[in-house]
Length: 85
Ligand SMILES: [Zn+2]
Image (tube, rainbow, N blue to C red; front, side, top):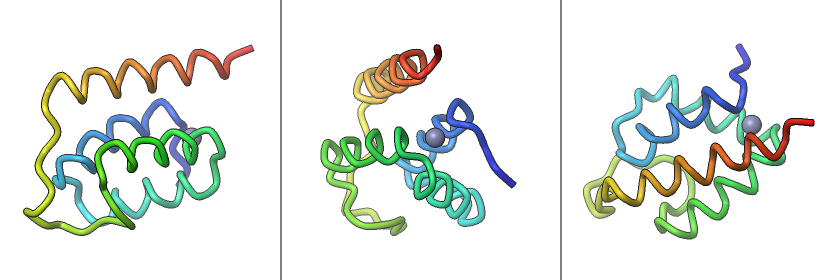
């Protein structure tokens, strides 16, 4: 069950909100592990939101501000666009 990169962002948003069902979270992480551009993106993402390792439903990490998510979405779309021939 592979998702393409463009569908990953939808999951990523829930992931960052700590609002992603574990099954989808696993899918997300699986995709990220096998997709270099997504690895790079998520790495920078994790740094910027201090997400830490893996998924941990916890309340000690604040949800992203809407404008932060907006920026992430734009960055992701740019990354996807840049991959196209
Ligand atoms: Zn990808």
